[in-house]
Image 1: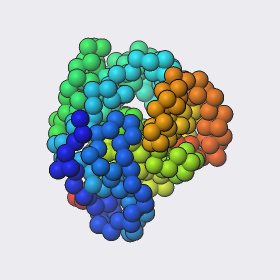
Image 2: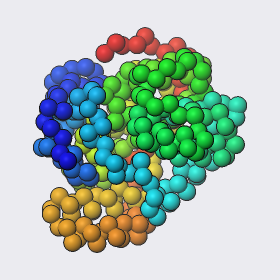
Image 3: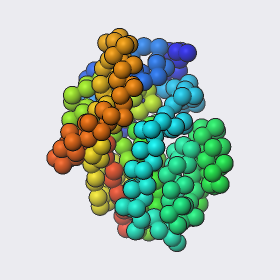
Image 4: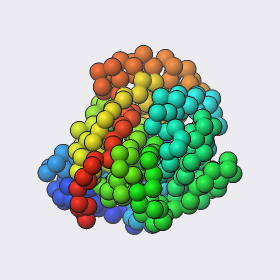
Amino acid sequence: MLAEATLLEPVPCALCGADDPQPLRWLDDLRYGTLPHPVQLVVCRRCGFRYLTPQPRPGTESAFYPSDYDPYRRTTLTARARRLLLAREVRDLWPLLAPPRRVLEIGCATGELLDLVRRAGNPRVTGVEPDPAAAATARARGLVVRTGSLEDTPLVPGSYDVVLLQHVLEHLERPRQALERIAALLRPGGVAILWLPNGASWAAAVFSDAWMGYDPPRHRSVFTPATLRRLLAETGFVVVDERHEWHGLEWSWGLRLLARKAGKRRLERLLARAHFPLVVAATPLAALAAAVRRSGRIRVIARKAADPPVPSGR
């Protein structure tokens, strides 16, 4: 069912607060069809940050997250491959995740990543998830997961060593305030680990409005490594690592979304059936993009600075 236009509202830049947008392109919800009309991707003339406007009004977000939203129902072969990649991530990050560290994941969905951290040997994990059904699934795994948002969930400042945001920051209405709160939740020397789409990627340039990283209106912001580093620095973090993912997921999805946009339903169905082989076939291209730091998906590790800045109040 299409959302009503009244669920959307124009917004200023979430990075600098200016209301001086330059239009870039129109975007439609090619994945789930929740938008009543396309919305604009714009770039702030003041700071160069790219974002969506209009965006969902506060409290209306559930209208744009349908029951078949992928992070809430991962059951396919590609999903199983994703779990293997996540397990590899946990092994790679284990020096940061190992006990006795306390780990908090914001937007943990069904708890897949937290479950892997626990299975690897650290039971001190907690999640926050706004979708009640996804949170219930995570709790059914035996995880401690609170239903709510980062803004409204009571959490003790200075009580976590690691905060995870797995493809979450781009969804948030106020990413600056979110990172300021995360800095407050972390102990001295704690780290935030973020996974998110890269708007400066080859895939974003090739697929244009069919790039899966846009995903309007769920993705409100389009970060690049430069704008992400700036926001992290302004909210009390120092980036210590930036890794570009190498698998071909975004390339396979880009072809499917291009076919969907063109109304080529038979081609789209064919590409959907061949999704996993296409991911594998596109992996060398994705690996090349990663090698030159132009991958469509990045992982950033940022350490809490010794003297974080005063919250902006924006």
